[in-house]
Length: 228
Length: 222
Image 1 (cartoon, rainbow over the protein chains, first blue to last red):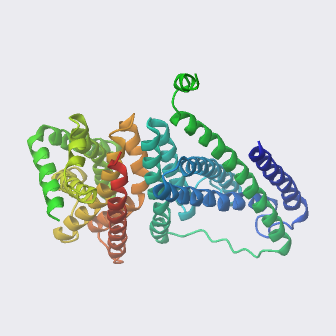
Image 2 (image 1 turned 60 degrees about the horizontal axis):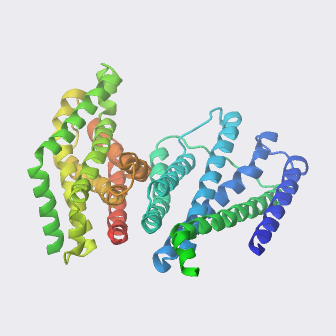
Image 3 (image 1 turned 90 degrees about the vertical axis):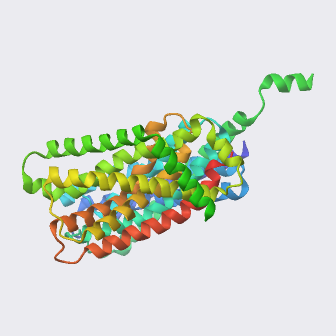
């Protein structure tokens, strides 16, 4: 129960920070010089981008942790971090599309960043699919750890390959002079998303761990007969 | 090294004895090429421009068949268990299998070459050796993570879905590099960009041939 309280506190702080950050971003921070009010989506888009990558980093570390320790704790952490990362990346792409439409005039563009994010999302979605389709808990843990490591290593390669691919064409450039007022809002929002992500990862981690332990535990009938 | 060679020889022998399977994969690749050319329409300019892309797409789609095939044989008669019991290190097992898959894909690529030239009306602007080297590097890039993932998916539920879902996002850099370099070879390379795509493909191969070799032991141990 102590765990749950700690998680709730972090989640609540995240929500409050999100409210404060949004208020600052929408009403206090100055307008974006080039994009005007549309630019204010920055305060959710950029933090979500940062934290989604952080979640995948956590998943990668958890996968390595599973290789070295082989415990369900690491496996459960990997499952939760991959899932939170997938949700955040989906959100990132949705927000990015909303932003791209009024500023670039299109919903989607095959720019290195966008492509990399899309490929990253697909690669980690593959990991979640793999987890659903393997029955043995140990096989599932090992195989999804392998897939997580491979997917994570791929992300920088995709980035550079697509950058080369696009470098033959015109690339989008966005000269930005960041005003101090914007920095504070951005920072508050980044911490808000970070706290909310920690809340989700911790809770999902606990659920995954409980489920794994139940999966690995002997059937109840056996326990009953032992007690009797 | 000897172990790698033995595994490679074994896999190629199985492939040779089960020729009907490989020819099936070959026909699948041919059909894809024809379908792609129909989808593009009769404009020979457009066909020529996209020949490289469709050649690699047909190779990629057929590769999932070839790759899952190479492990299905092992799982069907529980040969994988026997392989694990043999004094063969998982690393050699991986490199043997990956090399066999590379060769099978390379053969597929070489065999589909004439069809690509005929159907897409392609003229080669680079020495044929360069194209063969590119095919080899591209197939090696497909086979490295492909062999690793086929080892996983052959024992999971819904393997037909799982292999492409895991493999395709991963293969994006290798595909981009192969397609770009092939297209430059087919349509001329006035800016000399082909070289950088070769390097990218080579880096991809080096990275995946090394990490997949390390991870494969985890995949096949129970």
